[in-house]
Amino acid sequence: MEKIIMCIDMDAFFASVEQKSNPRLLGKPVAVIGSGSRTVITTASYEARRFGVKTGMTVYEARRLCPDLILVRGNSEKYIDTCRELEGIYRDFTPHLELYSIDEAFLDITRTHHLFNGPERVAALIKGRIMDRFGITCTVGIGPNLLIAKLASDMAKPDGMKWIKIEDVGRLLEELPVGELWGIGPATEKALNMMGIKTCGQLGRTPVSVLRSRFGILGESLKTMGMGIWTRPLITGEERPVSVGHSLTLPRDVWKREEMESWILLLSDKVARRARGYGYEGRTVSLTLRYPDFETFTKQKGLHTPTNDTHQIYRQVLSILDSIRLRDRVRLIGVRLSGLTRESNQMSLFSGLERRKALFKAIDTINNRYGELSLAWAASICKEGPSGRPITPSTGKELMRPSVY
Ligand code: TTP
Ligand code: MG
Image (cartoon, rainbow, N blue to C red):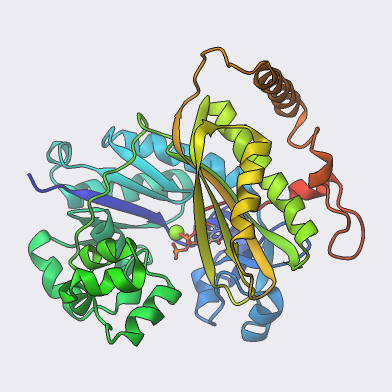
């Protein structure tokens, strides 16, 4: 049976929520910025996008393009609350859904759309409920798999709806530039273009051996993506979580190893703590780094046994860092633990391990009760902040941005 997958992506999510909660911002160019000392645009309203204002720009760059730009400091709790309520709306239409990021969800409506008179009707109903409840718009893409549903939503943005039927996929991808496809970033796009592969049609016809020799195992998925095939199933509630990760745009680009280690410890601890909170351990650790020019890459390494121990994750990330020759300063660091399995309750052979587990439990309890980073590892407290002042754990917390990757 052909699957019917729906991608729902809020339009200029943070900016729309802010515009809705402050009517004076309605219809105006608005940019939401993070709460750290460095001001990077997290998202811009469509009014601001008309001037060329984009996610990732500095306030300085954005103001130059759009002098009347109104800046609003982001309030992640507000967005997370909205996100939770949105899930409730989606669940009225199907139990099979994946909350992919803070503002994107994938719904498998294969078995339920007929109850509402078809996929387009489901889309219209969901858009209507979101508008009634929050006064914000979203775009809905429908397709035979996640990749095509996401493509449909990207094409229909903003406030749109598009259904790409399975029989139209081939024709549509034929001329589509590879960079338009979800998951093909600027670096991959450039590499493909250098090989003479410009469109998805060409990508789908490239022999897999050619792609494999350039991209390794990724070559396989690139080929299938070019063909419009996407086999990863939705990750619905029952299997969740498959990974936990945190990333952080640093208050200033760092080069010094010692400074990088502090941030990595902080992130490893956040990741480990979340895994412990869920009662999971993971066997793969990955490190994501972004250079000032936004080139971003991820490297991962497996562990012999699954863990949710802050320091074990930290050490693993450092060993990944050791294997990388940095070509520039680092702008963003991300740490992720994946391959999660339920924490084993069997008695450990090493009593030291038991003590560590008890220690982590105590720390987690304190932090859960008194706020994040009430207790932090001394080494994760940076020696100095962006302006040379020391960063205390509490300001460290302020620098956190929601991780959406
Ligand atoms: P997006 O879906 O990428 O962007 P958007 O919803 O603002 O705009 P649109 O979908 O209409 O193109 O991201 C969703 C929200 O996530 C966004 O409003 C802000 C936040 N965000 C970050 O915090 N950091 C980031 O790096 C990005 C890309 C987004
Ligand atoms: Mg969005």
